Image (cartoon, rainbow, N blue to C red; front, side):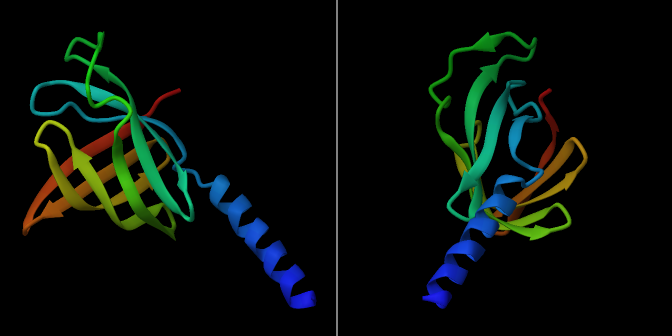
Length: 130
């Protein structure tokens, strides 16, 4: 019985620690090849980090309709500590490609990088939306 209780307490503590992950929130992406950018809500999905496009904007900063709103942009990202996230995927809507990705958090900046079939791409630095 003690083992079960201890496992439950540890599980709740791990969940609380994940909920407090500093990468959680809304992030503005860097402009894509078309000059458009988006807001991605980063949250926990089980014990991993994921993100969904919640708004899309044109190059002038005007909100636009996009079929990509509501789609996963980030999934299966593993937090490794010190603001480093790896072993996840990032989907680039403008290229319709999914990259094996990593992210590095530094304050209100999130550097995103990814590779597919040996071709690597700098996803740029995303900024936290206030």
